[in-house]
Image (cartoon, rainbow, N blue to C red):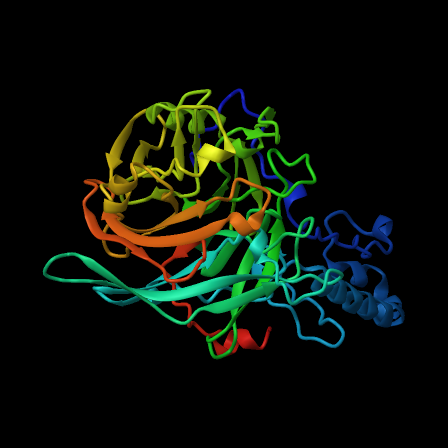
Length: 462
């Protein structure tokens, strides 16, 4: 997978520190060594016992058979292809064989995924999708105690419909569902910043804890839970701070996860680190590579005329197999140094299409009515997904708003979310911004059947 490895970058080999280690089978040494010094060179097993005569064969036959039986037992128990012993009080764990014959599971999951991309396509003009919230500090459940905090996010299913005659779209929202977790970092959690199907699993990404989370459905498909699969720390991994995930995509069979693509700063706005400039690539076995994407992010920054001390904030990035390009929908673009007070008003309406080698680009503008009315304003891209069967030209996108959130007083902060559809090649608006009627900030989006139920063959492992 080409993710622009640079000769100046650190080694990009798979890191066993980022994943559970696969067990190594050690085979017992052979015990068929009896009297080997007395045998003729090249003798077979049958000839060997004939060599010692009938009486000796009869005396040793019981011992020989016992040794053979023991060796067969050892071979079965140590074989990489053997069924693992059952856990006490439970069922034999589900696992899949890797290409080298070892058994593995995805972050400890016992069963395969069951959210199939094709199930999101109801017809050639109707598509199921889901969105997930990042409510920042408001994700904390106020009904929970300080000693045992809980955190929640909203999962929103919906249907996107296309008019056959006009090629325009409409959107319908369905009943929200809550997903609850107790996992947190320093009292914050469930701040989910993207949704992505990978290997038929529905994943979301906590931008506070650095956790990659799998969303699971109840048997009837009408409610959902979350299960943490992996935890990543920021930058190149030598930190105790969770990675600030903001976007995820799939390229060449790997899940590629990224952060905001700008330098992190301290509260006094001085430089802190380059941790937000790294990405992680993960395969379906959970093996990972950490990649310094500073040059790639800086290339994008230059194309948008936001060179230092300016910056670009990324929350919506995808690789397109159909276009063979990276697609960037920036959240914010600034030609000035970062300032919390002005940052929330620098929403972007631009699309940047970049070739695989990060050598050429095309910039497209989408002329939203609200963007023109506010002169830029608060609206910025926080997620998008390619509409099925459009060869990655049409996208459903989320434009979210954080207003008055630059102070430490969260009561002054308000959220809004808009959904829209447009052509990323021409910028043609196919559904202008539609406001979701609730004070929520959605930051994850995927075309998926949110009502999928685990098949019976999978339920036995739950």
